[in-house]
Structure formats: C-alpha cells, structure tokens
Length: 294
Image (cartoon, rainbow, N blue to C red; front, side, top):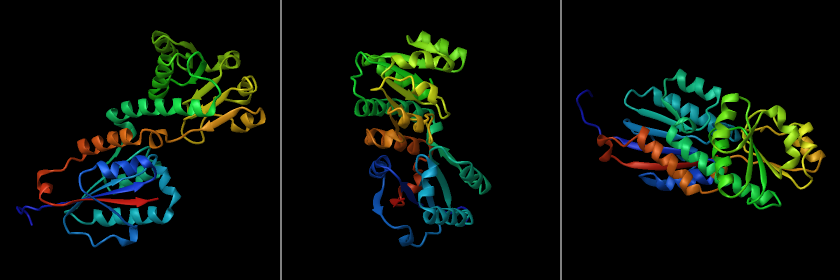
C-alpha cells in the first residue's frame, strides 16, 4: 500500500457528560450522528479517530460498560497500522495515562493546554460569581470575600470579584505568591491566618484541592455566610462542619459545563482544530461526529 493515496474518513467520538460537550459536537466540522455504542458500524480499513473524553476523564467511571468498550476499541485500533488515533480529555487519571502510554496513543489534556487554561479560568470565574449570587444572601458589590488559592482560577475569580466591587482577601501558602497577590491590589494572608479574618467575610471561595476550610475556621463564620468550593472532588471544605454550624456550603464542580457552554465548547473545538487538524488527504473523505452519552 506504500505510495498510494488514501482519502481518510475522520470519526470524532465525543463521550458526552455535560452540555459543553453537546455544544462541541455541533461546532466541529462533520455530520453529527447520535448513536448507542453497540450500534457502531463496521470500521473502514483506513480511518482517523479522534476521541474526546469527559472533563474530568474520571466521569467515565459512571458507565463501566462504555469504559470497557472504549478500551477494547482503542486496543483494536492500535492493531491497524493504517489507523490514526488521537485522544483528548481533561484531568487524565493515572489509570488512563498508563493505558494510553502502554499503547503509545497520543493524548492531550485540555486543562494543560495554555489556550484552554486561560479561557477556562475566566469562564470558571464567571460561573463562580453566578454560584455566589445563587447561594448567598449578599450582592457582590460591597461584600468582603475570601478566596483561598491563587492559581489560574483563584487569580481570575479574585480579579473579577474586585471589578464587581467586592473587597477581596486571598489566602496563599507561598510567600512569593502572597507578594504577587499584594502587587495585584488584594489583601494577602497565609492559611494560618484564616481563622483571624474569616469571621469578617460573607463568602468564602475555595480553589484548593486540599482540606483548608476546617472546623475551627467554619465555626467562626457569620451565620449568613456561605462557602463555594470549586476544587476537584472532594473539595477542600469540611462539609460536615458546615452542616453542623448551619453554614451554606456547596461543592460547585464543572462550572464551564454548566454556564456559558457555547464559549466553553469553542475553547475545546479550537484546541482540537489546532492539535488534530484535518489534513489535506482527509478533505476528500468524510467527517463524522458521533456522540455517546455516559
């Protein structure tokens, strides 16, 4: 087959776990088809497949049958020397990293791609503001808010809250990060100082995936205060303590998949277009978009 020209079909399989991925299916180039996994047609000998896994990839654990079939198909594709495989997803688990590495399948983590991280941070910040307004009893303007962590999301949340008129305090562990926080115009504290200031704030927003909002902090909070925790499950809040002291607390995950889903999907679509572009030899083939609901 060497020297021949192949017009490859592209199959993009989106394992849909939220509205963001539903929007992605409508934005990608190709004919959109919804189907159950077992209805998948016979594969062409020469085919490119792009698999878009959920964000986070751990959502695949919701449906072990689909997870098993996905791995079986990937193994089968690896046996075809003329097939091309690319995998996208978010926050790949160790299990999936080892599996993909074992079969030498190239994969991209959306949340490690700079162009996605930047836009996703602002979308998450907007979603966080929406959660604050829904759960709390105060307007953003004039409210004193504590943000824990100053990574990509924490920084953008603090800046957006400030633009909306909030007084922002940011807790960070490292001295150099606290210096950056002060340069950005916010009050910076160490986590060890949280108990001293938490009684003065109406809302706490946690972005740290470790236990930072402990019972000693929570029992000092105002009765009408609230906690929005956007860190990866199980979050960084002692939710039992929050319940004990009647503090409203919510683990708010996957905000880009809940709010502004079209903008969120465009970030993913642009990343796929950049890292897995349609090659010239595929322009003569067909591009199909398959959705599998998990």
